[in-house]
Amino acid sequence: MDQQKVDMFMMVNNKYFPESQILFIRERLLAADESREGMLHALQFKDPTISLVLSLLVGELGIDRFYMGDTGLGIGKLITCGGFGIWAIIDWFLVMGSTREKNFMRLMSVI
Amino acid sequence: MRISRGRLYSLLLFLSACGYLWLYASSHYLFRGEWGGCWIRYIFGIPCPSCGNTRAVHAAFHGEWLASLYYNPLGLLLAALMVVVPVWIVVDLLRGSSSFLRAYQATEQKLQRWPYAVTGIVAIIINWIWNIMKYT
Image (cartoon, rainbow over all chains, first blue to last red; front, side, top):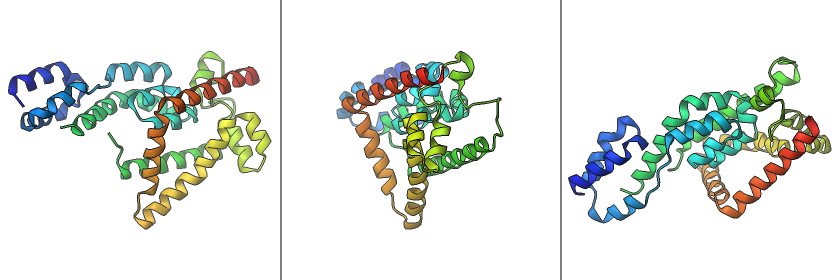
């Protein structure tokens, strides 16, 4: 893909991906075929900040996990009162990283 | 976007072990009067949709199905998962297969479709209202 388009994409979307993968994503996008561009723009990424807010407010009901697309673990969290309240607290610290990881995997499945 | 087999299996085995540990601790009254396992109840004084599940799972494991349903219908689901999931995972690991992972992903995809999602949300809300009526 064209370098200018890749730089623009990275500028707009880099908050959605893990810091450690930014360079790798850039390399992959540069090497990707032009035909992937349409699919790339159609992708919707989950906002890590929204995940954190959901985790803080309604994490015990597993809503943060449902938002990320982790429906199975969301149900697990919901039917155990947020893992007896402990899993809900652990997720406050993990949920932003997990959301970025999910976004990264979603992007990788396209390019 | 898919969770890996090793990660899912180890996470669910760990959660199942925690569940049995919690059940053992609560049945021996190790947390009596201190921590009921629910932030919503602790802070706001109202039960969450899953409050009563420890008692419900306990009742289900002792064959008291009606009592389990009364404490919380989700408890029966939780009790079934606590029995089936670890056994299925261990069998999968011994046989080197991924049948649980495939079933998990298929169920997850199905639950993300709106008719199932809406039904689930409505059921949880109804259960929550019943829980509030029972436990407050």
